[in-house]
Amino acid sequence: MKYEVESRPWGMYEVLLDSIDCKVKRITVAPEQRLSYQSHKHREENWVVVRGVLSVILDDTEHTIYPGESIFIPQGSKHRAWNQTSKPVQFVEVQTGTYFGEDDIIRYEDDYKRE
Image (cartoon, rainbow, N blue to C red):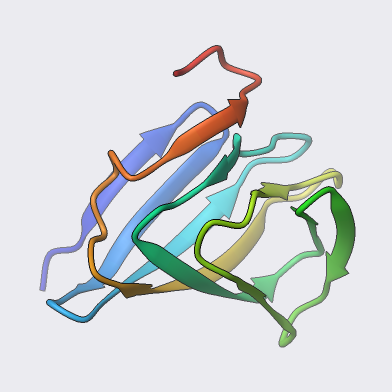
C-alpha cells in the first residue's frame, strides 16, 4: 500500500488512513521546529506521541506529552505541536469530524509566514 507523504517546513507527515469518517496521519516534527498555531472548523484531533517528547500549546496552555501519552484537541480549539528537543518527535494524529481537507486550517501564528 502506498501512503501519501508530504514534506513541510517543520518536518513531514504520512497519511495512514483516509476514510469518510476519519483520517490518520503519522507526523514527524524536526528538532526545534513547530507547526502553526491553528484551529479547525470541521474536525477534532487525538494525538498520541510515539517517539520523543512533544510540547503542545492548547488554547494558550502548554502541555508536555511523552511516548504512549495522548492529548485531545477539540474542534475549534487553538493548538500547536512543538518539538523543543534536539531529536525528531513523532506522533499519530486521528482526525474525526465532517471534513479533513488541508484547507480547514485557520492559522493564528506561523513561523514560516503561511496564511
